[in-house]
Length: 211
Image (cartoon, rainbow, N blue to C red; front, side, top):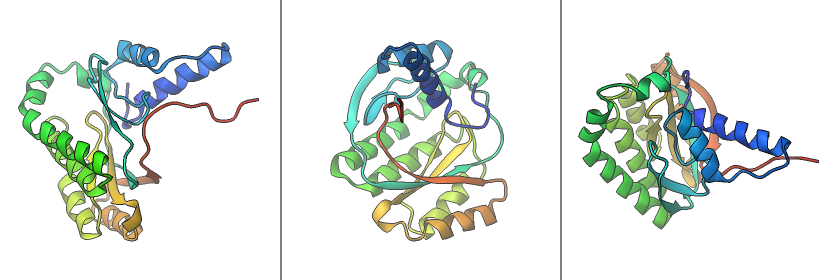
């Protein structure tokens, strides 16, 4: 289960990779995806690039390509989410269907942004998707974080749909206001914590180091 993080898929993938490396074999991303889905719905983190995937069935829909240079301030909005309980909610299906128009528009924006190397379009899609998920898993500070982020030049805010993590997205070529933005968010939203700042990369798993 995911307790207050959006990285359970990464944990599962890393565990599978480590186990198979120790056994002297190579595990395929599709197999990792199958294992993860036996535990809970998952995303396409095991697959290279930005991948559109059915997070419940694991059906690979298509690869969107390589993302433009985006720098992300990773935040925790507070609280805890047990993803197993979350994904067993009886109202989850109907709530997901209700937000489908916003999700489709968000996907179109992200597709265009990846295709054109446009961080602003990716950020707009991420923000729309985050807001569409508020009726399902509300993050009370989200709207204010979006306002603050825009005032410092961020291109958008993304949100874990079944976790507590948020990301403030900056075009890497125009990220001068990121540090001040994070300070302002943490000052105005005391329940929010800043973990670290990262660069957006495509998915996939690799072994670091070795003998």
